[in-house]
Amino acid sequence: MSFPLKSSRGCTWPRAVLAAVVVGVSTGASAQTPPAPGASVRVDAIRKAGALRVGVVNNPPWLAQNTSGMGEPWSGPSWTLGKEFAKLLGVRIQPVAVSHETKVPALVANQMDIMIGPLNETAERAKIIDFVTFSSTGVCMFGRADNPKFTGAQTLDDFNKPEITMAYFSGAGEEPLVRQRFPNAKMRGVANSGSVAPIEEVLAGRSDVAPINRMLWPNISKKLKGLAAFPKENDCQDSNIFQIDTGMGVAKDQQVYLDWLRSVARRMQSALTEEEQRATRSLR
Image (tube, rainbow, N blue to C red):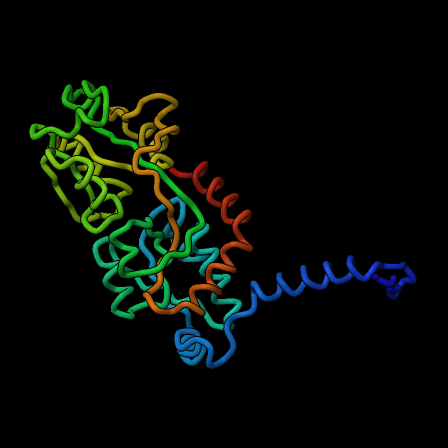
């Protein structure tokens, strides 16, 4: 039997309702409260250093570098979430620049506390790191609009042929996916020069096709009229090729730290999604 309680304003509250309110408040607080001293070796080290080391690499819309010299050095939902982690820990955020090729090795080698990246969650990566996911994506395949090898493709299997050369960024999340899906194509792994995809490889004719994040394709197609996408319907925005979860990465065997990071990401999910959508619309 529950007995009514009075609020400070004289309103009567049933015990069950009051308990639900208290639980809701405590749950929200626990989602923000970092692990206590001694509960996580990683969190203790971050507090001692006074900085949260976050791995960064330009990968809009999730994480975009600001090279203007004004304002914050990075933006996007990954940066927003990284700053929230640092704020709750009471430390500064310290960017650690890496490349697509080095971001996972650097994380495993303890050169950062979290790779805010972002990272695509692949089965291969899941063997060596854990993930804090807050987004998902698929890819478009793109090529030159005047290349019949590309424009003649009716299905994905048409790219899985020895006469097709496929470019990808070495170390990027798409690498194991394209290698597995297109074993008969000639693979051409290239270093990331700061672009969102191996566009130069395709434009120069060294490769017939390459993957690009589907959210980035509309902007690229506006800027470079000589390119085409597969699938072409709805400007490739309905593509489910290589649909995959996307987020951040931490080294293995840090369960307390990982659980806390995930709880903060869940609390901020709506805000992160909205920021991702804004960032996607403003891509240039």
